[in-house]
Image 1 (spheres, rainbow, N blue to C red):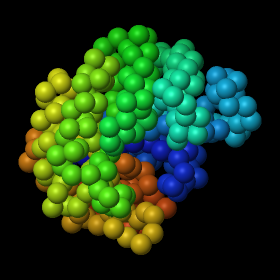
Image 2: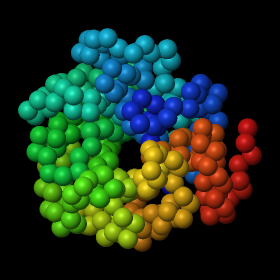
Image 3: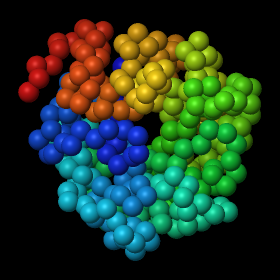
Image 4: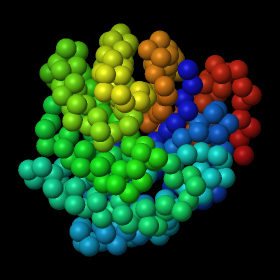
Length: 308
């Protein structure tokens, strides 16, 4: 099993920035291509008062915005086209700061934000899908309806020709003092997937919040549920290490191999990661990420990349 997709993350709260410009991003995309990555997913194109392109919609709704000096969305699309990579556009998220019953404000912002993005970038051949950035772990009726409405709006623009993707997480012990049981996880997601079945095409559950010995059972349970509702089964392999006393270093190779094996045994369709550029790239600001890249090349039996 190979990692064939990665999130791109430039504006979230807890992931370091590499302070890259176009030249550094170009090298990173070539490093992705070298190991067979064919899909990139912008995890959030807008987050709170930040955006990866100069959005008039977010300016209108959010007010004072962080200045946008470069159009990263266009850069990512152009680099994707140069390298034969598909790009999924990530929607807007506020981490629940404007949350009201039904998340209506976030839904309304996203509808206009998605329209704006499609008008700006829909011409790019690399624009291959939508990523709905809101993440859920346990039963949340308002939250799941929010995802449903945003995804339905994406579908209204491009139909089923461009798939919609989500990446939920598991309420496991690495993040929750009272972790969910496998049985409750199955029950909660049976309900939420029944709501989303006509709006979401692909579900890539995150794999980092449960103990390693639990992971195979969770992946198999997720696959069973997704098959039930006719959704495609991806796995989001976290390449950062949650077991360390600080947030977050690149994961140890043995742990990455374990998670790849678990996905392989469950026969998921595709493995993506959060995130190549920070935790696995030979150009990451973490030196150990480059070591992880080399171990992965050795594992695949491909020639190690000569650093540019």
